[in-house]
Image (tube, rainbow, N blue to C red):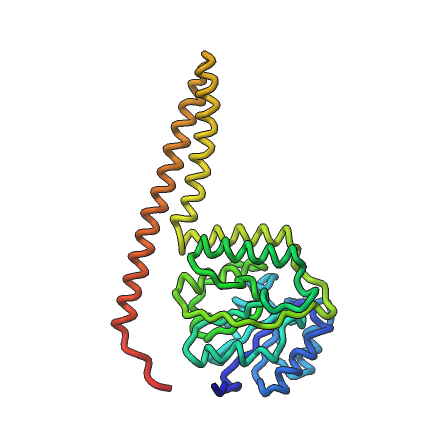
Length: 308
């Protein structure tokens, strides 16, 4: 399918990517993409200057720090109907751009570049690869959809679908939030395999243990809206489990002739509270399902979009 490159904005959020940003912008220019937006997080090197010299439109990030804030701010500058987003560290190939964009011109809302099956040797450690797989399966449990690589930084959107995402995360959790919001909004999502290269000159900003924990917490936290029975169910079952453990302790001592009146009351309260929180999740899940069905019916009543 022919892609109208003038309708595409290549969006690159950057922070200290001087060794790679020039070649990246130049490659897209040579491929015929004229609308290249670099939103720089106030780099301490010459990232912004190099990108501007190569012909990109460069803006310095104003809304705080972090990739998430950069993505949210970028919506103020993008006017093209299609957006291709990738990191500026040289790990993603411009040559995969058409593969990423074609589904949008076929009617998809959001395209995710899957790194985990086609990465170069050394680009991902075994630990990072395993961690990504675990997070993907946790996302499936929490949000009901398996997206292969929810942490991918290579994505394509229609501008309309991008603006429909209610994004709030400021840091590395942003990819998780984008995936969760896309599923919640029932966007038409396509996953395509892309090459993932070893970082060719810049240090990674990701700290696997610290940031992995934040991402897992985000997967659970974001389920509050899209899958409340999972979110509140985890809380409720955890409280019930504490109550049961206390109950076992109280029962063992009671058999020995030792009475714990206060602990007995606390045990009953914990089990009741945990059960009530779980039931609140069930009710909230019913409301979310009703809201989804209502939105689908409203969509059916809307007139089709006029031909372009």
